[in-house]
Each structure stands twice: as C-alpha cells, then as structure tokens.
Length: 102
Image: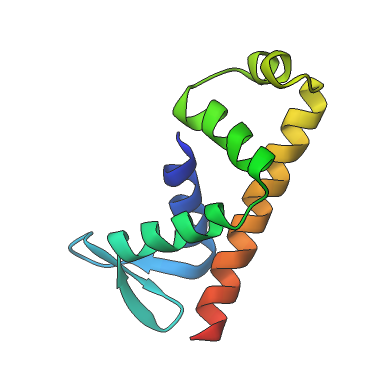
C-alpha cells in the first residue's frame, strides 16, 4: 500500500465515509472528491521538512526498504522508521486541522 493509499485509507477510517458511487467521500460534514483529498495530501506533504519528503519518496515512490533508505541517506533503520511514522502523524494531523478549519 502506497503513501497516498495509506493516507486516504487512514483519513477515511478516522474522519470520513465513502460515498456510494466511490467518487467522493464525506469528510467531516463536507462532501469532497478524491481529487480534492489528494490535493490536501499533497499540500500536507509539501509542508513537511525536506528530509521527511525524501524518505517518503524513497519508501513510496522508489519502493526502497528501510535498510536501503538508511544506507542511501546515512541514517539508522530506526531513524527511517521514526521519520516515516512522524511524517504520517503530521500528515494526518494536518488533514484533521484542515477539516476543522472549514
């Protein structure tokens, strides 16, 4: 499961309900399209520190293992896990804040 899939699943599981035709979802008290949700995910990712975005890209975009990411960025495997976990928490929190701000 890729970053977008995981993030969208996570958002739907915590904050939304899939609309019957699967082209939209109820997000809080708002009906939004998947495209709108992807735009919000992109904005949340863009707000992350650069090294978080690089680790996310290497994991999701390049499908590298934690060990491969650690080796390529001179990090420990546990640091890679911490960065990925923190990035996902930050993205989820940002999406939650975005929903509450509307």
